[in-house]
Image: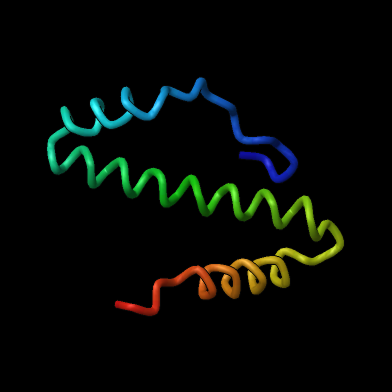
Length: 77
């Protein structure tokens, strides 16, 4: 995805349909979906940081990215 490009939007299924789809997946498919969603979350965070801090260098923005990820980390584990 280009730095200034918005992520593509997709139609959102309702919650019940979503749960049915998850229920039909194998454990391997659910794990792959979790990884995909994690990567998407990181891409969205990077996109938001580019929009919020356009004057920062890529290295500075990466530092902010890592700081934000650390704040999101669940300290119960």
